[in-house]
Amino acid sequence: MQITLLCSSPEHPVNAWLESWRAHHQGRHSITLCRTKDELPGGDVLFLVSCSQIIDAATRAHYLHTLVLHASDLPYGRGWSPYIWRLLEGAASITVSLLEAEDGVDTGAIWAKRTFPVPAHALHDEIHRLLFDTELELMDEGLTLIGAGAQPEPQPATKTPTYYRKRTPADSEVDPTKSLCELFPTIRLMDPQRYPAFFRLHGHTYSIEIKKVTSHDDD
Image 1 (cartoon, rainbow, N blue to C red):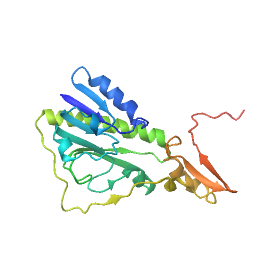
Image 2 (tube, helix red, strand yellow):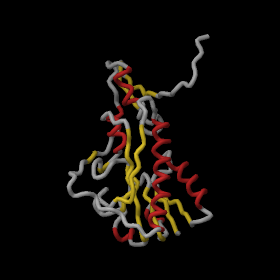
Image 3 (tube, rainbow, N blue to C red):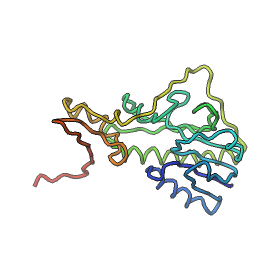
């Protein structure tokens, strides 16, 4: 197959996973990694992974299938950063949907879904690992389904969709008057390189970086 991966951010941590996936499959497929829709060469399958660009119908027409990876149990959680919002709401697991791209955001038919547990102690990098591994598994499943001639299932009309807004830097601010126990569910999700948690105190702004210690010596 002629496969294109479109990830619009070269700084996104998923890129290491995409490069690994491309290297693993390159012998069986021709795979191109692009950063903008203007670079898209056309082909059989276009995967949109952490892509912030709108891919219109004219662009999608250059592929047999344009597939989106979206970290929510669609039709619930359409929109932006769904797995972050869900974890902030207290969810203990995340469902990732593989769907056909349509003009309506996150409205396309579903090819497959996979769910993974998220431990309460997991930090942003550990959650990324769980999420990206699941996304690669769904990409493999999508290719298998397409090769077998399967068709995606429309999102159920009996379920009322929910939507998440786009996160802003203000969403990473924490209240320094709260206890660390109260703040941990928010701090653990904030990527210290791209979206650091921060607080304001004594006329200054401080960013927070948190790391898990695997062993501890009292000596």
